[in-house]
Every structure is written in structure tokens, then in C-alpha cells.
Image (cartoon, rainbow, N blue to C red):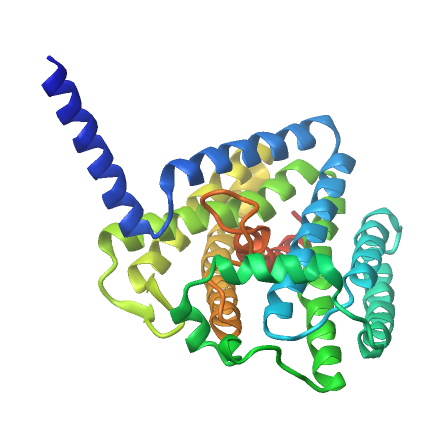
Amino acid sequence: MMEHQEQREKEAEEAINAINKRTGRNMPQAIATAAVLVILILACLLISINLFVYLVVLFMLLALWELRVDFATAGLHIPVVMLWICSTATLLATFYSDRHIVAMTICVLVSLLLVAMAASAKVTFGSRISLAVANKLSHTDAGARLESSFNHEQGEISHSRLSHVAVSMFTVLYIPLLASCLIMPLTFNDHPVAHAIMLVFMPALSDTGGLFAGAWLGKHKLSPRISPKKSWEGLAGSIVFAMVGALVVMFCTYDASVWMSRWWVPVIAGIMIGIAGTFGDLCASMLKRDIGIKDMGHLLKGHGGVMDRVDSILLCAPFVCVLLWATGM
């Protein structure tokens, strides 16, 4: 009896290891983390849409810290405190202002100016960032560091002040601007919960579809140099899953007249989310490969860091935002 039980446990462990190898993740950890995140997001949406906005702000602040550490491993500095202030102001102004687009535009332009000025100043990393960088490099294999555009084995790297400014301004466009497109649809046509689900869960669902379709059916590589596990079959799976999810959200949210006249909206949304989400993953993979790191962070077990989870969400946000606004959904 004991031998049969040990055999079953061994077979189960081998099956889990095979799945982990195919997907490139620790799937039990990834599923548990995803379940916690889903419960947290849904709880915020059910309690108050304002609470969901604050949750988005919190995640963006964590993402900015991860980016600061990631860039610091390559000797690049971004003024994270100024970015925290500007990002918080931009997201909250976008949501609470009566003129959402105007508020977002002004805040992003002011953020670019303030962040550029802060980045051009001589500011040392300090002991906390040094410890974070050391921890980051300890979790990164030597092969990734050698493939990096920055050779970490040669010690500290010196960059021009313009390089720090350019990276900092890129961060403003990457986090506050794209995250504002995540916030703005919450103000459209009194459907904040449905729009939040479209913006957050559909890219995640698309990523899940691409993960499993690529793991089990993927034979034709999409971009082997940037992300060896991405495949054309995975891209198709991403589009199909996003399309089905968008159809379900629309069916549960709108009445029959809207559903019948605009059935094509979730179809377009699925295609846009599938393609933009995959492109977002590739951009993040290219950034990680260029810096020479494996994951953006280690906060979310089984997923890497916050940026590893939100990269596709951020890239999808402007496309979904424009689609919802243009169709009056």
C-alpha cells in the first residue's frame, strides 16, 4: 500500500515538473499567486471603484521600484521618489478630474520635465539600492549577464547624464502614461467594473491562453532570439482566449440591443489584446535581455515581479481605452 502511494506521489511530482518545464514557470506557485491577485482585485472592485484605483497606484509604485533596481544593475539611475510622486498625481488626476484627457496630458508633460530635472542631478544610489542590486544579480544566472549589453562582470558602469535622463523619461511614458490609459476607461458610460475586468483580466486571460497553447501546440517560434518560448500557436491561443473573455464580459454587462449591434467589438478587442499583450511581453523580454536579468522582480511567486505581470496589461491599455471610447461602450 505504501509503495503504491509513493509511486503515485513520484508520478505526480514528475508530471508537475514536466508542466513547469513546458511553461517555464513554477505552476503551483503561479496558480496560487494568481488566485490571490484575482480575489484582491475583485474585492476592490466590489467594495469601491476608488479602492481599485488606489490598488492600481500601489502596483505602479511597486513596478517603479522594480524598474529602478533593474536599471541600476546596468548602472542607470532613475529618480524613483520623483517618479512615485508624479505617477500618483497623474493617475489620481486622470481619474478624479472632470477633464480626464486634459488632466492626463498636463500631468505627463509636467512629469517629463520634473523627472528629467531630477535625473540630471547627481544623486547617489545609497545603501538600500545597492543591496537591492546585489540581490537582483544573485538571482540572475551568469549567461544572462554575459548576453547583456552591459557587462556586469567588469564592475560598476559609468553613463552620461543624458543616458540617465533618457531612461527616466522613458519610464514616465512606460508607467504613468500607459497606466493612465488603464484608469481613464473607468470613467466611461457608468460601466467601471466591466471596463476594469476588460483592462486587467483580459490581458491576463490572453497570457494564459498563449502560455498553454504555446506549451502544448507551439512549434513555430515567434521571436526565438528575444523570447524562445513564444510561438505563433501561442499568439493564436492568446487571441482566442481574449476574444472569448471579451464576449463573456460584454454579454454579462450590456443589454441585448447593444449586444446584437456591437457583437464585433469583443472580436476586435480580442485581436488587439492578443497582439498587444504578446508585443508587451516581447518588449519586456527584450529589456530584460538587454539589461542582463531573468525577471523584473521576485515579489509575485511564480510570476517574477510586478512588471512581469503588468507589462502586457500596460501595453493593451491604450488600445482597449481607445476602442471603448470610440464605440461608446
